[in-house]
Image (tube, rainbow, N blue to C red):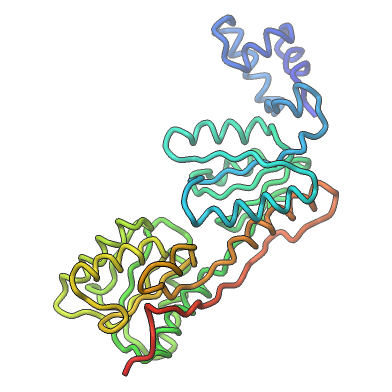
Length: 331
């Protein structure tokens, strides 16, 4: 394993000088800094915070990198990770990648100041994940499949969930079906769309009319605005699949303001089963993601790797329909 001493020797400088250069100190000349950084690159040296520079074998801490630490969607996932780690005597350190936090999160990952990390943020690119993953530093990714010797993935079967949403509306008797999808560059949204349209095709339904397919941004306001656009069309569908619960709640608000009754005039099914979905009125029918299980599985994979076992590289968790008041049989 390459150390700061190896870098200093290769660069022909003192260890203290190499350390200052690696940490971008202005006490080192530009020429010396370039020489040290070149040596570090040649030796594939990576700073490793406490774990390497202080020669600690284990920190007994696991890192968690999320896009957003707030919101009801993430809470059960964090709880699943934390409870599982606690049972093995490990603690949890979390950070987000929103806005300017991205640079801090990436530095945290590269320095590997924990014994492993769970990543649930599309802001962290594949090349960064490849760079940080090592034999003794396992990484579990929650939002994509990934092929790497020391990297594992846990995902929800999003295309199954999209299929179930369409199937639910079809079984209730809906012929006119609309769709408020997520962002075009979001993999989860893409998979939900694939499953949704596959089910419609298999049941002989035509493609969703352009006027009834509105794209949102996975926020409550995005769902509200998407529903407002839907209300501007000449006719409304009788059933709508909304690609996540936050947008579905916004859509319910827009329909309520317009005097459109749910489920009497239009019916809605969401995706995620966030806690709020059961308390709003009408309560929201949705596709449930097993969020606590996602977190618990990710944490268990990390512990398995640390203990020398060989965990499953790729875990896919199922979804299920949760029937509530926002959908029901058509009469």
